[in-house]
Length: 455
Image (cartoon, rainbow, N blue to C red; front, side, top):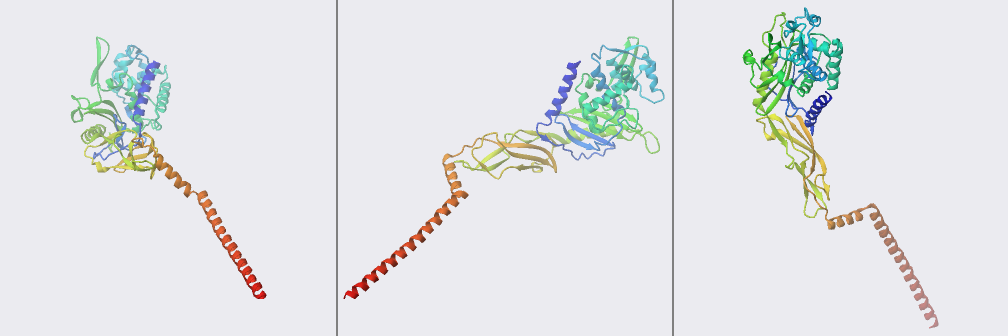
């Protein structure tokens, strides 16, 4: 049990870490899809890049998409879901009387033991509220509140800051809410758990305790039901979880894969009743999800915007004998989802690098950073490193050192002092010579006078 929990948590962590090897920002695009849902959050699961969002952090009611968390808590607290059996008790089912709940047929199996695996099928395929309360009662040891507390603890553990559960099935409660982003986090984690994707992708199966009694379970997700889905059916949808209440509206959490790409779409709050209280027949959550998937597969593709082998820019370098510049390359490559018809000129790369470098520079030294943007949205930020090693020239270094010495304040001061002393020396010498000359002249005059007197 502990090993399975650890493995699931490790997978989730690896998914998250792989998306943030570089400093990455979300990139949302104009999908040209008129969505009716109150909140939408769509991500590319291959890269973790958000491609479309609408009110994705606003609190909304999740309806039966709540059952994704119910699934998580159930699987993580039952060591063997396929062999662990739970007796269906009428008292537990009676809690749903008068609620108008969607049921999976457990009322036909009262008093009989059903495997947890079968209950999970009832929960996710038929969206049975009866399966939700039976699981909550069993795992909570007779206390559904204990199970609900486990749901909220798991939400907090996953980092869902705007999610709070009041029940395991999603019937309306003003304090039972989530956000499209939080629900995407919850579903991504659920996808790492055993059987989740298989069950959510099942169109129909049977609930059976013995060979004499079977009850059909048919998916509520029309995107994967080719028989009953009609115009909602979408061949590339792999599965998901629906939800509907008057207050929450139509909701759908789903995934789709095509051409090597996989997307997840969380669509919440499409109107299910109009202002007059009449049911809206069109399921806007399914319509929106299908339209967004079609847009994504037809208009987006993975593009390499930073290639670690291609230089981004170059920087002037000094003290290198045969080099004036050094090329800078990204520390790593970066690919992201972008419009298929994007022009290379639309990708903006801004660098933050020094004005110049001084040799030596070693290959791989981090010199600066490059920020990549598209349509005004930052896609990533990556370190720029030296593409090669540039050695320092000893001769140029000696000459540069000599220049620095000559230009240093102390050298200038010393030279100034020498000049001043030299000037003083010249002045003193001139004064001394002048005096000496005068003395000689005076002596000569005296000699001439003495000579004239004798004559």
